Structure formats: structure tokens, C-alpha cells
Image 1 (tube, rainbow, N blue to C red):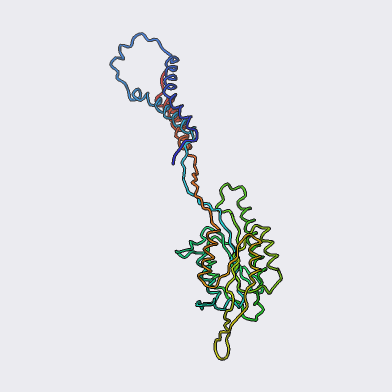
Image 2 (image 1 turned 90 degrees about the vertical axis):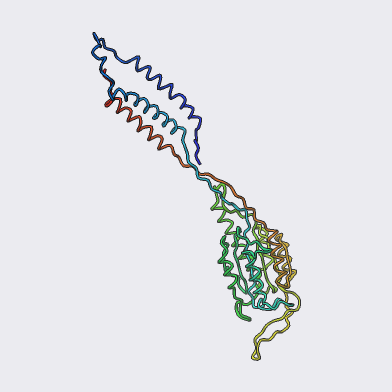
Length: 356
């Protein structure tokens, strides 16, 4: 791509022939003359190579003037590029890792709840070539909680590591110090991660006209199958904090009603009925407080359907903007003009000098 920053200056090229004619006319009028008695003896003398080249200085001067005018017009070479920007979503997955997540989903699906959550979360993050396109343009991270909350992956734009870490998630051992359900702690930690990332992006993009990514929406996707039994930070208080920070919570209750609990005994693995369930009222209140939504899911298809709904609710706006960066190219024309003027002066005053 080539352009002139000041193309109107190229009109001066029209004046170059007129200026050369005027200078030549002026020089002829000012050229000194000498009286001589007779030039008959010079009739037989032909032109020399110097006289044949007397036009060269004038041509060099004209080309030099044209080159300098082109340089004044500031020729520029441009490189075009297409930059993709996104007004996207920052999503923190908050996953229950208490021991009860090892129980089967129920019904005909004998897989554990945590395995179903891992599978559907992976499809939500990376896509499944069917109903979920993946969140390739969004910032995503994950927090887990049992008795304590931990960040297993901060908010990232490249999601390969996030998918791997979610897939490798291990549950707390039953009746261990880590076993428990600290829903409020998980929500609070995820909210803090979202807030910190938003502040960091705002600072990084300060003064930038077209930043690559801006957070349009901040979201927590909470998945739990238990009732809150660790109240270091109550879930209601954490939800109020999320509402103040503009963070929506989509809460998902995993399983309901009578389920089965898997235990290991000296006589082998046994399946016992389990009537423990999550606190629907609390999860619904947490979601409503922040402007989010609450679902109950009893199998993998229902969980996938919830993620499809979230995928539709939280759209990312992607825009492509074309930019062109220009580099100045006047130097070579300026140097060429100066070199031609210098050559013209050397020829005029040395090799092609006129006498008188």
C-alpha cells in the first residue's frame, strides 16, 4: 500500500519546466559577451563532446527538483492488518469437590456426579462440535471447594490447561479434614478473582483506543450437590458481594431426591440409599440476588442443556477492525534529489564549465 501524506504538493511538479525555462532565459540574458574581429576561421570546427553534453546539467536540475518535490509530499508505504477485538465474558467455574460428588447421578446414569461435571464442563469450555461452540474468546478459570476453597486455574484466554486441570480434579476423601461444603467460600474466592482481573485489564487498557479484550459480563457458574455446612463466609453474604461487583451467579444443583451412596466394605463395594440433597432455597436465593438463574439437573443431558442455556445468555461480541500502519519513504527521494543537485553543480563548475 502506497500513498502521499501531502499529495497537493505534487502540483509543484507542473512548475518545474517553467522554472527551468525561466532560469535558462535569465542565464542567457546575463551571460557575458566578448567582441571579436572575425569568426570565419571557426566555421570548420565541429562541436565537441562537452558542447554536446551541455544539456545534461539542466536535465539533472529538473529531475532533482522533481525528486525533492516528491519528498516534500511525504510518500508512505503502508502495511494493513485486521485486528480482532472482543467484548467478552469472564467466567469462573465453581465446582464442588466434596466426597458426595462421587455418588452416581441417579436413574439410568451410573456415572459419578463429578465425572459428568468434568465432561460437560470440558465441552462448555472447548466446544463439542454439536450444541456447544466453546468459549474461545472468553476469559475462563476455575475454583473448587470442599471445606476450603482453592483456585485451580486463574482466568486465562488459552483454555487447554484449564480443561486439563478440571479433568484431573480429585475429590476430598470422606470424613477427612478437607471434606465439607463451603459454598460461600467458593463464591467469594471466584468473585475476588473476577474483580482482580477486571481491574488489571482496565489498568492495562488505559489509554488504548481498541483493546483486544474488554469484560462485558462477569459470571460465576456454581455446581454443587450438597447443602452448605461450612459457614466461614455464608453463601448469602458472598452473593451480596457479587451483586455489588456486577457478577452474576448461575447456580446448578446436581441430583435431587433419593440417590445412592457408594461405600467400600470388607465385603466389597456397596450402594446404599442417600437422602441428602442440596439446599434449593439457598441456591435459588444466591442466583436471584445477582440477577442470575438456578437449575436442578438429574442427569448429564440436563446438565448439558443448562450449559447450552448459559451459552446463549452470555454472548461474546467479536469485531474485526482493519488497521494500516504507515512508514515514511521520503528519505530516498530527498537523498536522490540532493545527490543530483550536487552532480549538476560539479558538472557545471568543473567538467562542463563555460568560458567566459
